Length: 171
Image (cartoon, rainbow, N blue to C red):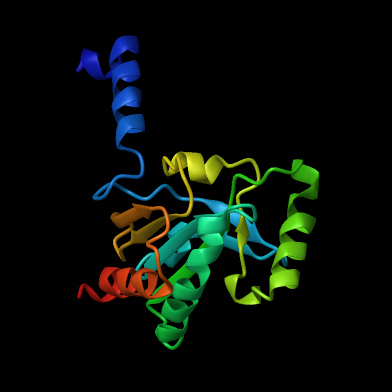
């Protein structure tokens, strides 16, 4: 009983928790972020749905190359209320006060409105998921646990699309 409250036990537990953050089978860290239009997005409010999270940045070429495949997957599940896609913008290389305008300009210039990004200003959400490289994609199951994750670009839009379908449909 005493061990769980001991200072060194707590340090050990924190270290283990940091090592397992963002791994398959663990609880997905909750977050509360805003879209460009100021809408609040909270992961825990999506419980019961399959949620695909795509961490990306405007400067990331592989992220941009993966968007067509993600758009295909988003279109495939557009009528399915049990599937959500969240494009979490993170690791931007601009001051925080310019972040929103910078991302909005990027979205407008490239006509990526379908991303409807949520802004991880300060990168806390990406860090909570243990993201070390982008694009980083996570599939959160209806029970709130991480079912799948991948880092990097799959090489083609079709490969990205196929991975998302496999994650969502289990095929």
